[in-house]
Length: 380
Image 1 (cartoon, one colour):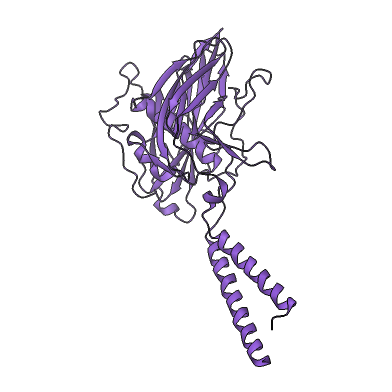
Image 2: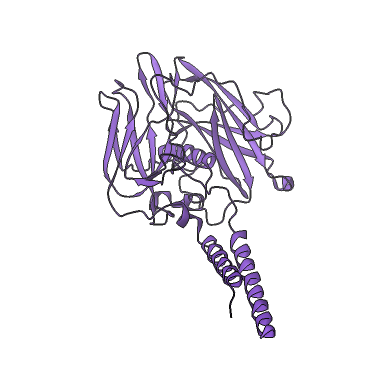
């Protein structure tokens, strides 16, 4: 006869076993509900009265019901970087894509101008991952440059910690932007090596192109001799200045921009299956601008720090920016559009031990159950 104490023990063990089984489910299944197949809209909420501002929209990837991204044809080389990104990774990816779509003249899905209220609405969109690129413009003597960002449609929203999340199919974003009033600007490039343990495989030099509105304007070579960095001065502020590193075998680059400094972090071991696009810098697909053939020696600008920079701490400030990134606080309250999903509770966490722990718990439960059965048999 089963006593009440034994009954409660068995029920508790069964509940624990079921809970362990639930932990084996994929993290996305617990984090998000399924995405419905329906149309979405994206509203870019910028600055009121800035009718000069234009934005281009690109569809980067399809998104499945369980939030997995599959790159579209024009962005297929990014497939290995579309899932499992951190917020910093999404920002770097948006910057790189923003440069590449200009360089390769990638066809955009839509292009529009702000209305008098400072808004631009893209409607009738399929679900997916989208890239939004703002074009540099001048308003009242000040130059504005919206920062490119990635956004998932629909977007996961969680009103509060205690409230259940939901998918929002009509998303409003306020892009970040830089402002500047100078006629000329300075830009730096800093190479960062993230390859501890593999420094012998590091190349002796890397080639970096400076792009003016997506066209190669200048090319420099970075080496240990110039501390893997370079400075361009007196650049015309009417244009958008970006950089691209030519392919470095065995490394995967990520790009950053802070103040006036571009950073290129080269991480050892390029993800497999990442093809090189045709017309890459140095090929006939995008020749340098013949009006500015200058190519100064790589050591013409020597900086003080001779050390080879390694990956800096996450919160390291590289330079004091002279291009303010933050708009006046009474004009724009930023929702962070750098993260395609507003709530990424599982990003960066390790889930592979969970199934092993769950199986271990089930195994221990079965051992205990067999032992109890034997004790009951002996007692009878």
